[in-house]
Length: 279
Image 1 (tube, rainbow, N blue to C red):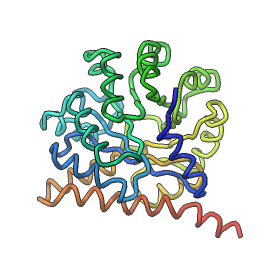
Image 2 (cartoon, helix red, strand yellow):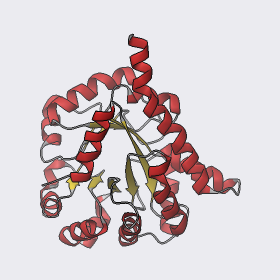
Image 3 (tube, helix red, strand yellow):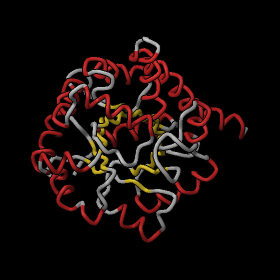
């Protein structure tokens, strides 16, 4: 299997001595055209990786902001097939930025694993995060993805003990997503002091980079986590920008990309600030 774009991006980040910035946005939020404009603008705004959520009616791991984004995406008609079509349109203008789908198993089951994996490959998708697919049940999906060289990226949490971590790491590729807080997205805040040893433990168990998400909403918090993680994931803070812009009749595209620029700057500066403190 290969995770060429993901691996190349992490190698580039390592050479630059900084953490990566992973942005999560929802397909179709607030409309298909605006979602595509946001997607295409993310790399220039500072995104090193993009997670693209596919709307689902029962996103059990999400807090209110991403739940609302999913409903807006569904209202815009973005099914899983529509999300893959959106990915195709993004990839037509960006050959380098790793693109990872994130969502739930039901729509994938409905499409069928082989068909889904083939369409992901055709659309230029590099990886997949499926929140509700435990490792014990992931074999057929992983086989289908492996056939098209697409990474299955698994989640580790504060409650994942060493024995369970071995199971999580098996057949995971690209990177491991460390959920920094117990609970749903967009509610609690991450604590860099507790994240640091967890990142070391997950990295040692998997041999892969570790991206930290859930609970990172501000530039200050993103910078703190960027000092200890290989990548920082922000999602709820971005979809909240869409919600706020809609309520104020402003451009959701500009709101999201401006927020990305602010957060990306903090992530990029974090290690430089750490080096200055250590001198």
